[in-house]
Every structure is written in C-alpha cells, then in structure tokens.
Image (cartoon, rainbow, N blue to C red; front, top):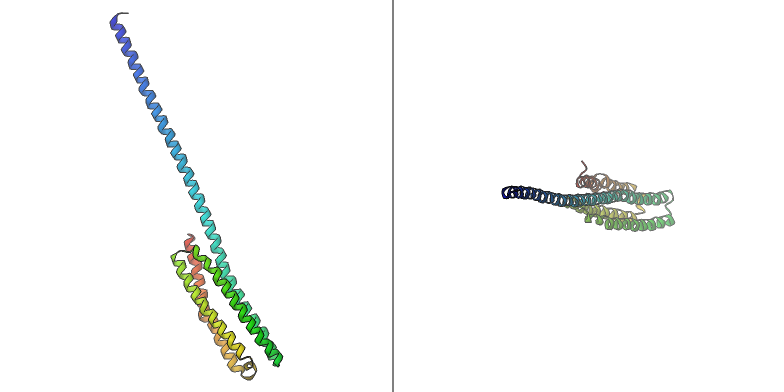
Length: 216
C-alpha cells in the first residue's frame, strides 16, 4: 500500500470515526435531554397529582364544614322554637285550667327557667356558628354578620316576650284579650318580621356556600 492509499484510508477511517463520534455525542445528548425531560415530567406529574389531591381534600373538608354549619342553623331554629313554645304552652294551660296561686307560681318559675334555657341555646349556637368565619369568603362573612345581628334582635324580642309573660301571668285570667294581643304581636314578628329575615338570610347563606364550593 503506497503513501497515497495509506493517507486516503486514514482519512476515511478518521472521517468514519468523526461521524460515529458526532452521532454518539448527539445520541448521548439526546438521551440526556430525554432523561432530564422524563424526570421533569415525572416531577411535574407528581406535583400536579399532589396539588389535585390537596385541592380535593380541601374541597371535601370545606364541604363537610359547610354541611355541618348549615345543619346547625336548621337544628338551632327547631330546637330554640320547640323549647320556647313547649315550655310556654305547658305552663299557661295549667294556669288556665286552674288559676291557683300554686299553678301561677309554677308558671312563673317555668318561664324563668325557660328564659334561661332559650338564652343558653342561643349563646351556644352563636359561639359555634362563629367557627364558620374560618372558612367563609368575603360575601359569606357579610351574610354571617347580618345573620348574627338578626339573631340577636330575635333573641332580644324573645326574652322581652318571656319577661312580659312572666310579669303578667294573671292577665291570662283577668285580661285575656290583652294577653292574646301581645302573644299575636310576638307571633307576627316571628312569622313576618325578624323571624322571616332570619330564614331569608339562612337561604342566602346556603346559596353562597354552594357558590363558594362551585356548585351551580
């Protein structure tokens, strides 16, 4: 093999080696990029799954809390009204059937106890419902503020009514018309006044809870 052939062969071998080297480098670079891409993709997927799981748990937690507080509102209305009217009706029926000093004294004691029960139910509920503020958005907080104010007004009127009934127990016998008028005024307030406002606010709170949860 002469010098020219050797040089030619060497050049060809060198060229082949260079081509192989470039191809190898490109392939290594490609694999390295793919490996990094796969790692980044796996990391992103893991983060997304973590975020979705976190959001799901937060949503489920918020849903559970909102259900709890809405049920609390419903149960408070039923519980407080039942305590009020059951206690009132039982006591007054005894006085009407037998307006003795003993029954009148029992009625007054029952009204005082009832007033305490209703106040305790109210304060317990008010403290518990304030826990909703930890989860509520701005609009829900505004509705909650209105609800608590309306609740306090309703409670005030209830206490005033019970005090009047307690101080005027004998009027059920001596002036039934006046007693009936006062009772009807209180009932009207319960149905059409602040009581109705409470129900309307409770419905608005329910709708805003659904809105915050993304439930149409």
